[in-house]
Amino acid sequence: MVSKFLGGFIKNGDKGNNISSNVTQGEVKDSFAHPAVLIFEKIRGESPVYNLPNNREFFIGQDSKNDLCLEGDDVSSVHAKIRPEKDSYMLYDLASKSGLTVNWVKTSKRRLEHKDRIKIGSYNLIFEFVKDDAISGGRMKKINVASSPMTLKLLTTIDGKLEEVTGLVKDININGATIEMQKEILHKGNVIEAGISSKELQLIEVIAQVIWERLSERDGKMLYNLGLQFLEMDEKSRNILKDYIEGKGA
Image 1 (cartoon, one colour):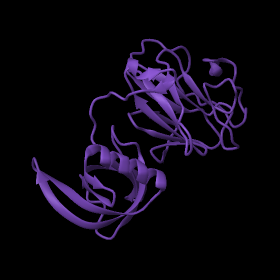
Image 2: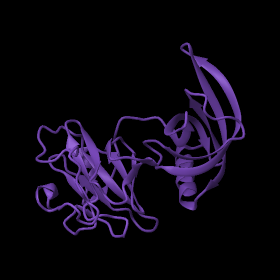
Image 3: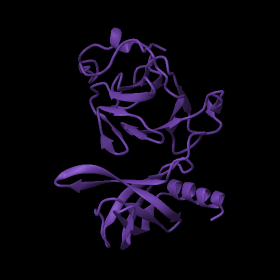
Image 4: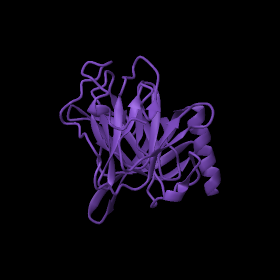
């Protein structure tokens, strides 16, 4: 694969690309990034898994020279790249014509975290950290990272600005969940669109309604506990959640 697109492959005005000067370019040096993969999520069939190199950049776009090739009018020739930087990976939008989002938030530069969900055009990609022995023959065998809590993420308007808000999922079943939030944002009767995920649970997307709210205190801080009832969930998310619950013996 060509690993230096920005050194000569991309030209200004090439299918929507006009590379910004604030995009880090050039040779990757002194990277200690933990092994990671990019999962190309597909509705049907097996989702391909791509190893992310920790010694060079990984390019995504329409052109066949990219590490990951995507088709579609809303995908630029070289749409984005993932660059290992020190102990992490940075995602850059390469001035594409349609942009990209991470966890439903549009961005041009983002430090990636485990289970981050990237959307480019109509394609969904999932970033995950793995151990060196977790990849075999291009397929992911086992995710083995530090335990992480289950979180709920949603977009809401705060002081006139659209912001991503995160809550801790304390309990979940096929019909709903109990969440804990540090800010008083949601109230009984509110209907939300949200994503729920953890190390063990692949991201599911739900439409839910707040059916109760309670205040609690821990270490001198007020916490907002909410009961959610799931109103809508696509078949894939429902199957993922059902398998998770059955695997936990719930």
